[in-house]
Length: 208
Picture 1 (spheres, one colour):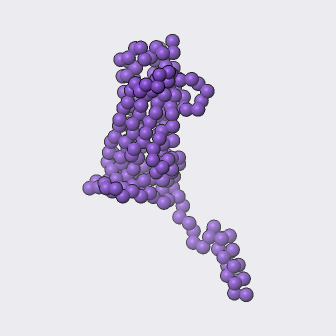
Picture 2 (picture 1 turned 135 degrees about the horizontal axis):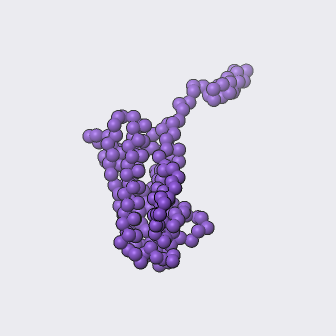
Picture 3 (picture 1 turned 60 degrees about the horizontal axis):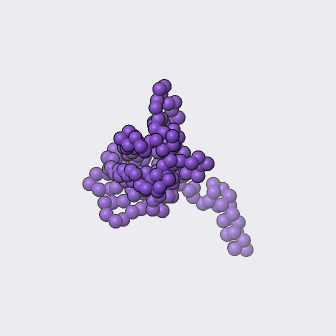
């Protein structure tokens, strides 16, 4: 009889409020993705098509956890503060939209589309985390490489790393700092790519 009462009580706990003691709600965050932009009148894009391959990283940044660490080897994740998507995917989306919005290329497409590109842009994310040191920081470290689709040769690389100060000891402030860091890095990548094609006329004539 007691076992039946306990079992009924357990069922009641599960059915009321999802369990005995309300679970703590999770909060989700995302990076700022550039909106669609109309190319400026008279724009003269480079005659190349870029294919953006998935950004690679360790498993920590291919999941939705927000990662924190001290300045040593220890790393942890927030349980109830998460990204809306894995950082590798979010950064890939920001990069794709930013390169399209620049109107510097005939086309920029994600990997897996039916378009045949002239160059493949690959990236690896090394850091995307909160660092608790003498000051609270948000660190982003990302490297991009451009490969000629015909030859497989690496024709351009750019390495970005930056520690953005965090304004308060709050996860939302960490997210804002990481977002600012990513936007700054993507702008730097875009400018460096533009410089490469502007100084290598032979590279932007591949599809003519």
